[in-house]
Structures are given as structure tokens and as C-alpha cells.
Amino acid sequence: MKLILTCEHASNRLPASFKKFVPTDIQETHRAYDIGALAVFRKLVNFAKPEFSCEGKFSRLFVDLNRTITNKSAFSEYYGELETRNKAAAEKAKAAAIKYWMEYRENIEKFVMSNIDKGTKASGNKGAAIVHLGIHSFTPVLNGKPRNTDIGILYDPARPLERKYAQVIKDEIKRLHPHMKVRFNYPYKGTSDGLTTSLRKKFGPHYVGIEIEINQKFFI
Ligand SMILES: [Zn+2]
Image 1 (tube, rainbow, N blue to C red):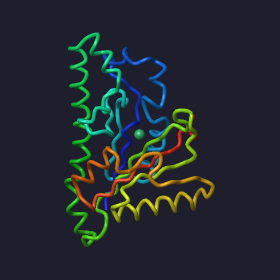
Image 2 (image 1 turned 135 degrees about the vertical axis):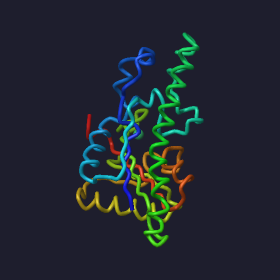
Image 3 (image 1 turned 30 degrees about the vertical axis):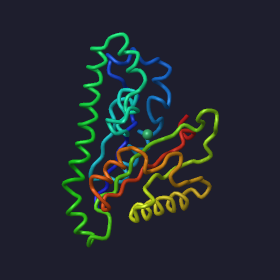
Image 4 (image 1 turned 120 degrees about the horizontal axis):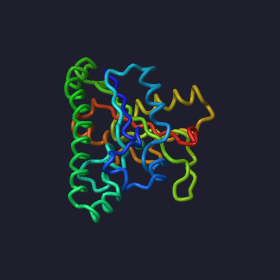
């Protein structure tokens, strides 16, 4: 089995041409990136030494690496303003964003592609060939409502291997930190549009894709 660690929303960086269309205060908020996720991701990379890891280099306001590129929400509302002011610049920014998105996805897919068959065979066609953990964080209060969970574990409940690994992760967190509130598929569903959802479709049941969502109250 090979381990992959990724952090799609690691950065709030914006390309210079696009940056001026995003209010400065927004650039510092959870809208722009997953606060605290990069620090956790780096610790995990050092600790677990995954066979493959990568992190987003730009803010999701430029393009969301955790959305299908044909999903309208991959692009933030700030493209609208840029389009009104300068259509050519908006198109150029979008083309650069798509290229960046493609490269990010292709790198991960290449690694999965070249390891999935070998790993499946090695597991006797029973176990995981790839375990992919995506590291994310969520804002503690959304639209005035507090989110009463410390860590969310997102997976597809219809997939037996993901059920198994999600349970192992939950048990281990609870063993180390019994007071922590850990919930499955909260604050989002593991089956929503995202990187793991797209990799599941492409690579089948021996790819295990789990997202770890950490409450940002630990970092702010
Ligand atoms: Zn995220």
C-alpha cells in the first residue's frame, strides 16, 4: 500500500494580475485558504513519510483544486469583477488557473495510475493499493452557526475499504485525545464534488480517498 498526502487549500497566495481584484481582508480569511492546514500537512509529511505528497500553491479564490474544473464553483466570484473591467485579462487569468489545476491533478493521477495495479495485486485483490489523505480545515462558525466538532473524517460510506480506514483514523484520534469530538462526513459529505470523489471514479475500489477536516479554532 502506498500513502499519498495532499493539501489542496494550503495557500492564500494569488497571482499578481488577479490579486488586486480580491479585497485584502478576504485574502486573509478562510474564504481564501484552509487556515492551519498546511502546518498539519507538513507535520504529517515529516512523520508519515508518504510515497507522494503535494500542496496547492495558490488560493482557491484563483481556482479551487478540490472542485471539478467544469464545476462553476471552481472559480470565485472575483472573476466576475475582472470580466467586467477587462475581459481579456479575465480570460488570461482563467486559462492560467486551468493550466495550474490540470498540472496539480495530473501529478497525483500519474502517481496513482502507476501504483494502483501493483498495489491491488500485492493486497491479494482485497486491500487498499493507495491510501490518500487530503488535509483540510473548516471555519468554526459558518453563517453565525457554531460547528460543534473538532475533526471531521470525510469518506464514501458505500466503499468498504474507506469505511475501514475512516474508523481506524477515528479510533486512533480518540485513543490519543479522548476528549476530541470526531465525526464522520462532517461538515461536508465525502461524496461531494472534490479530488477524492474524482479519483474514486477513475481508479476504483482499491483507491482509498479520505479527507481530514480540522476545526480552525485550533489555529486562530
Ligand atoms: Zn479544504
